[in-house]
Length: 561
Image (cartoon, rainbow, N blue to C red; front, side, top):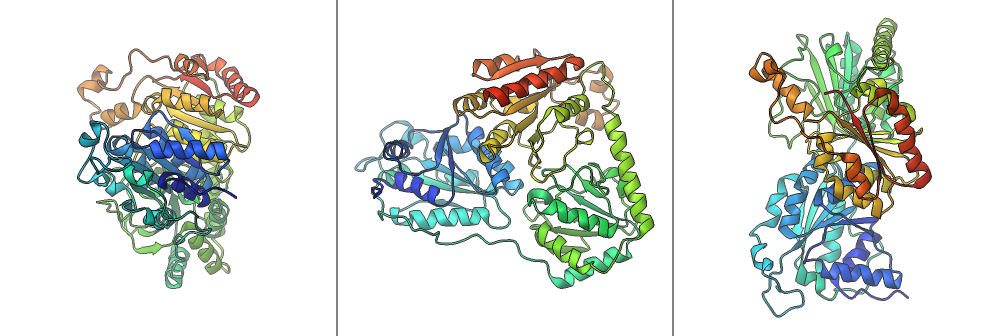
């Protein structure tokens, strides 16, 4: 018979595992002794707890939990050191919040007692690290926060945390765990077999709204569908394909964070709204926070908009002025199923369907042609096309900005994940590590820019990959600077001093770090490539290292700026 847990810290670890949490991504501090002791006791006695992963930076811990959850759909746990660790984790927490990713972030809490209890203050930092409201740092980016106050609350608080994290709309939650409480004797020697509460799923759309949407589509001259994350539910791509065919509407994956439709679908309208928006008299905004750019994308007079999603008006965005003539709160899956039932006896105008599918095919052919000839320097498009040809079928792409999707073939649900709309850099590399832990049988590729790679604290991430034997490809699209900042400056000041001098202050990395050498120093394979003709063979070597030697591979691809 399994022995009873000795401390609240050990009981918490067992409880997490019993509730389906497989990993604890941890950046430890002096608040962790009971967690450390609990892990050691579990390992020595064969007790089932989440697999602990040592993370050299808090952003890696949170982003690995993010990456696992976006693939598995199950919240994982990250734990950091009191207020300072929490501060370092906020970037990743904001990303998870805006991308509806469930995760449990726990942090120690500076001991509240100065003496008289196991775990009371014993270091000078225990005074300086205490805050009046530690959770105040994260409250805007979590669904729920709570500080454990008594061992008797352990199961209720943890079950509530996980239920809220998984409830629609999903997101991160935050628990603070005082050092004294973690060291106390548990209130119970056993853990309940089932959680105290279960998460709330998304609601179905109102039938009247479904009928109104169907009526609007039947009257529309040229409807367009735009989405960013409908494919977070892996049942959606097949449903969306049927819906597009039934309505004769192109589907635009605008700034996509998930694969919502196969790139080969006859109604895949690409990744930019601009080619379609001027013609549209009805736009269905399906799980998309920003469907177009009001300053540059001109809409037709009389345009009607239907907004659909688990949070269709993005209520937690302070300002968002996109019109909504019909607002439907429902998951993409339930909405599409209801619409397909409603439209079962209708058929899209044949002429419109033929026109739209022909335009989609022409756009697809034009995009592929842009990378059909080898350039003199490596371009982002050439690097994306070479990667697409070299990767294994069914591989997972984790993209932090650089991939040129038009030159790639992406067809399967769960094949592509893009960065959060919050844009907190440093997500891609650790998220890919977490994705690989969630899907060890699949090949995982982190496609990152050089700037986002630096933000990821690559030494910490490479050390994790080597220590935990996590074989992913890290492909750095290295243009030696902040391309987004340079493009934004040129767009705002096309005739400005920076543009005329062709020099953008604060945007260039000079000298360029030797990323491959850094990776090698951490125990990973690393190589740099500058010649476009040599990129395919370099990719083959990188994938061979992953497939045959089970080692993380880092390929530094020097791209034209």
